[in-house]
Figure (cartoon, rainbow, N blue to C red):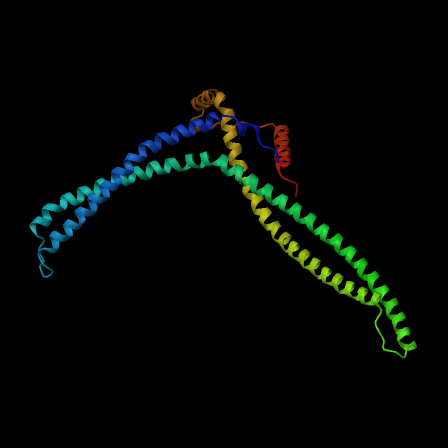
Length: 281
């Protein structure tokens, strides 16, 4: 998967978004501090109001004069706190889309790496399975050869046993072959276990790869929009002029949008380029 060359260059659009983000954040920071102070003042005023109201006793039906006098202070503290909450919430809602844009390049790079890593893992595991399968093929041939040789040696030993009246001693060759057979079978079992384990890992990769591919595609789409804005910045004045001019002849035209028709051959070329960016399945 090839890196996009534009990702290595300074992006004026991202610089613009960063400047807007920093300006809003600079405005938000003191507001948050002021809100924290207002919340503390409101909590203190509410606690005092409760204390003044309770001073009359639980059986009293009348609100003490001190509590009545303090009530406007509590209301003012609450109004100040709510005003600040609204301002903070408004700034945070403006910051969120900017934060998403600024996080896009890193998210895109991570998504691409995750997908590349999964494809590399699948390739490595597939190669391991092929290696183990090759070893199992050799083992199977070796087992067949050993079993055939043992059959011959066993037949020869059987004849020797019948021909002798002395104590029979198993031929050393037969003993070695049987030992080798046991070792070879144990090796076969171990290789089959390894193959099953690798295939188990491979079985879980398609779902993980599908999710990683989908995530990569979404991140790439967001990154493509950033690249588009970067390319559009030099012609934005011309687009704004054309949109404003259209508004003068079409009252229903939304000045903030100006649709542009994209030639089909460019779309096809872009689709081919996007497909080429995807790692081989």
